[in-house]
Image 1 (spheres, rainbow, N blue to C red):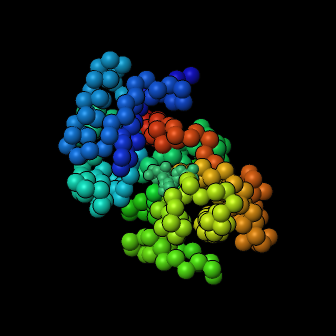
Image 2: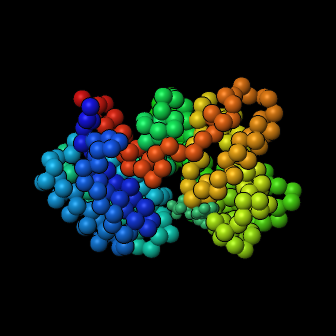
Image 3: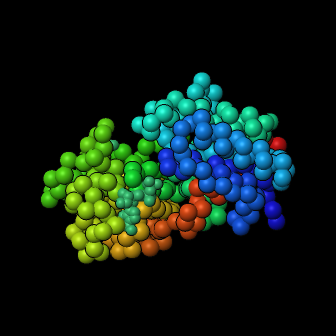
Length: 298
Ligand code: ADP
Ligand code: ZN
C-alpha cells in the first residue's frame, strides 16, 4: 500500500539529492544537484520541487536530512539553518525556509543526515522492528545517531557521538585530526585520520594492514560506550571506511572482549551490522520521518 507522498532532501556537502517519494521502491521524481553556492543550490531545489509537484501532485510533508552543524531546535530563531559550517558560503544559511515556501502548508521535519539514515534503517532496513538502535557513519567525519523508545535522541543541536572520547591505544602516538579535540573518536578514526596516520588513503590499505586492528579498537569502544548508556539492540556501522569488508568482524570481536561478559547482549553478529538500505537510507529515512509527522498532526 502506498504511503503519503513526501518531498525529501538529502543535503550533503558535495551534493543534494531531492525527490518525491511514498516509500521504498516508490521514488516518483529524483534529482541530484551539486552543492555549489547556497543561492544557486537552493534555487535549483525550489525549481525541482515546484516542477515535480505540478507534474505529480502536492507533497503532504517536507523532510530534510542535512549535513551540519545545523539548527534542529524547533522554535529557535535559526531553526532550519546550516550554522557554523566550514563549508564556504554556507555558514548561517537558511536551508529550510525557501523550501518550506515552495512546498507550502505542510508539516516539516529538519534532521541531520545520520538521524535520517538511522530512521530509515529502523523503518525499513537493518534495525526494522527494534525500538532502540544506534548508527555511526565512518567517512570524512564520524557522525552518530541514537534512537531510544522509537524516538531520535536530540539535544539542542544534534547528537555528537562522533566526538566522544575514546582511550588511545598504547601503541598509537597519532595526535588526531579533529580541529576541536584532536584525538576524539572522529579525530582518531575517520577516513582522513587513517590517511594521515598511515600516509595512504584508507581505501588503499590492504586488508591485513595493522590500521584495521587499530580502527576496530576505536570503533569497538564507540559501540561499547553506546551500549553502556542506552539499551540498543542494533548498532549500524556505515560510511566509506566500512567498505573494508574485514572490519565488521574485527569490531564485533573487540566489542565482546571489551564488554567482557558484563552486559547482557545479543550475540555481536546480530547486534553490530552494516546498513541494509545502502545509499538510500537517508532518503528513505526522510520519507519515514515525513510520513510519521503527518500522522502525528492528524
Ligand atoms: P562522506 O563521509 O564524505 O559522506 P564517505 O562515507 O564515502 O563520504 O567517506 C569518505 C571516506 O571514506 C574517505 O576518507 C575515504 O578515504 C574513505 N573510504 C572510502 N572508501 C573506502 C574503502 N573502500 N575502504 C576504506 N576507506 C574508504
Ligand atoms: Zn572531536
